[in-house]
Length: 239
Image (cartoon, rainbow, N blue to C red; front, side, top):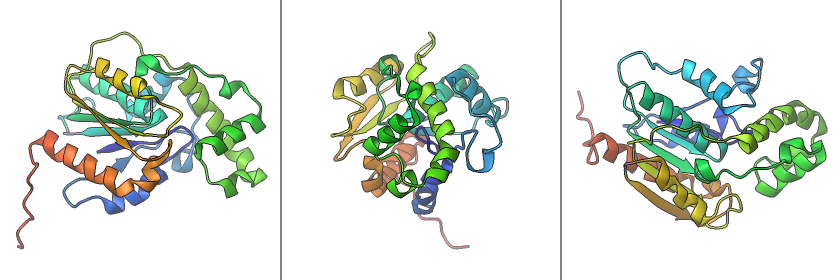
């Protein structure tokens, strides 16, 4: 399973997920350019450029690899665009799970990326996207704020290009108090696929994942096993 972080986030957000994953499901967190071990790489501020970079890391020309994609917030549309690329390459993912983001066609326009540093920091406080102690540390903020601004620009200017609908089943997750997505915006994900589309609401705001990590992992694990036809997996016998 490939895990796509939220805007301003990095692969390390999912570190605990990998440790909590069951033995038969592998979680791999995707690292966007411009952060952690890819800090020296330029930060794409356009979805096409970002997916170009990420697609280059995927074995699109090799044998098919059964994969489920999961993305939260900005990561939801990144995962969706990668699913489109995999499908076009003849290797559609087994499943797509999206969290905390309106359907692609309903993505909200915004101007946060055009605001001052102070306005951007206040937005991070509002969404609980970053630890508050970090936001109070000016030297650290100056280091990562340009990357976050680029992610906001990417999110707020994103519009899906025309193309065929997916055939992949889609699962949509969101918090019942998330100001970034309404039930109607969640329902819009039905339009991206000819496959099944199911919904799951959790108590909480935009980062309900932090409170319900284990429940989300359990849901994604069941999804992966069902999609791969291994919903009842026996424990391996001892050698």
